[in-house]
Length: 382
Ligand code: CP
Image 1: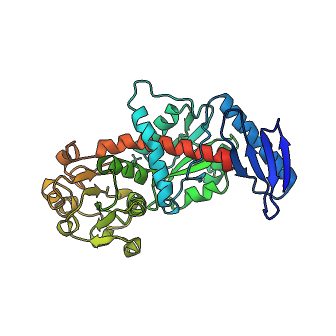
Image 2: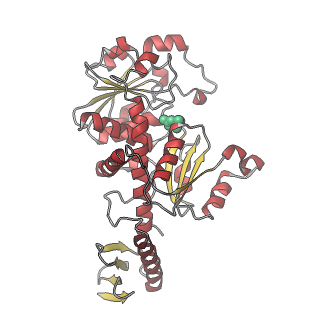
């Protein structure tokens, strides 16, 4: 084995006989050792990476701003729920628990992410996601910049990728991206050095929404096994439905999708769900009824459902909720169209509706996501 000690033995580089890459071990005083791969077989490159990591860790520890935990989730980006396995999801839910309590304190501020720079890049409207990422980042001590894209140089003809490259040159730690184009966050993650979080890409995915929904359900039911969850409404255009189906089935729940035929995706059967067009049948034995917004902005060139008829057949009111289990809970990711997807009184009924709880859990889960992804970037990123 080749073995080199640096920085008063606090930094070691070693390469085993059969191993391809140089390994790095950092052992700072009073801290557990951190072992990471340099992911290179060239000593000079490994040496440079090791010194950079050592500098980041000794500085962070001097500032008391980072923990030396190793999380089960090793990812640097959060793009698609389908890329998370059950243990990754459980790791995010577990780490967010401490923030649920933290967010109830009078003083809601830590220094965990002090000195970190986070950009909110929202190319589509948002209230909940944008503000909850902002609250999450600020409570962790990071600097968050809301880029006003309506006033940005995109209006002068600059391409999206040029805008992203410009922001990347300012050395951000995280880019949070919402955009109408499917797959755009993944493309961005390949050209920037920072972590990327998909805050909704077209009708594709919205992973932090599904994680906050899972956290809300976990708080109420403790376990996901044996839960029957209905997801109802405009499923075909819903990134929330897609991400929730991925996450909740991996956690062990059974999903009933209920939608008019025109709003049911053709490939839905591949997703391991039961499919219904009738609320009475689909809600039978459900513990949770998750309603979806009609995505008017994505029903371009097609005929929008008649709102009154839609509410009669698919809008959730007390009468339809009675088809589900006694005491079943209601969820909605928001923004809601009251009187179209959901009866206004039911939406506000705190004995049945978890809608405000979902918003609250959104801050906790996003704090955990920011903490873990930035920590992983320090450990495993370039
Ligand atoms: N649920 C959700 O994504 O809401 P916003 O569009 O307000 O962010």
